[in-house]
Picture (cartoon, rainbow, N blue to C red):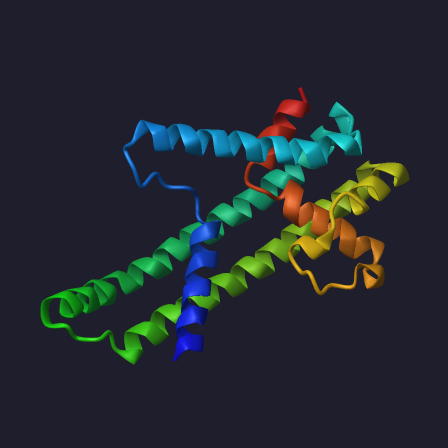
Length: 197
């Protein structure tokens, strides 16, 4: 049971972490802290993007593909909202029963939301892979060999998978990792747009 709950928690955290930020507090101090965190994240992205030495023209050629990727993500998020809306009545009922009568949520309700989260995560992974492939293809058409080598070596994939044997990764796999982690980050489009002017 503990593993199931941990799995449910991790799935929920992954889904929540990938959703747009929502302010949970009306406290201006929290809002200011969130704004500072966003700026720090923007600096970190710039720390990865700027050393690639892309020209404004190169960025302008890549931007439309990044924009297409953003649009696909937004459409996926809308489908996710629709899927979650289908669960709302059952979840509200289970919450009411839990609080009013102490009734433990049923396996059916829990199973349904776990299945929904798994479906959402699977769709996100497919969209993420397709988006990264498309952006990388455009980058290979646009950047020179030195720039591609720079982005290939910019990040250490062991950050997200400590057991990964980096020496066994191909150049394309390292480049895809950079695209997924940096160029397809939600803040990167606006950064690239500013850099293209």
